[in-house]
Length: 118
Image (cartoon, rainbow, N blue to C red; front, side, top):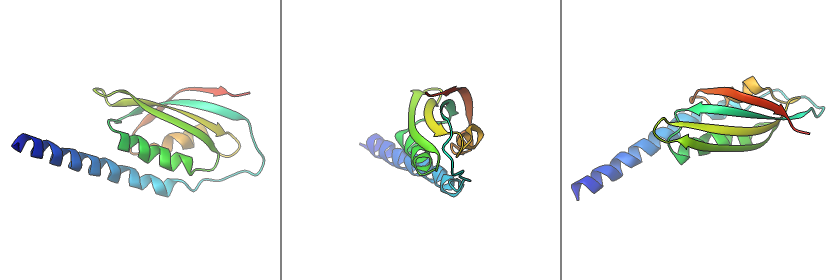
């Protein structure tokens, strides 16, 4: 019984810590927008440090509010290594791929590929 209570408390602490890390992303959503629509592109990112759904939700909520981002798909690919991937469709006239990688902070991300969508 003690083990269940300890595990439950540990889970709550870990989840609350994870949520607090993503709150700083809210200040990064104010990006410059250009009036003319640009080419739609899809960037794929490798994200480090993802280990729970709360991590994913924090990043997605910031990206979905960011001008220029059309869609976001993030998933954990390796729970042990705490890595994930993200596929983001964006308007390159409104936001750049480097700005998108900044939106994943505090989780470091690297660009795996960036392709044009026709």
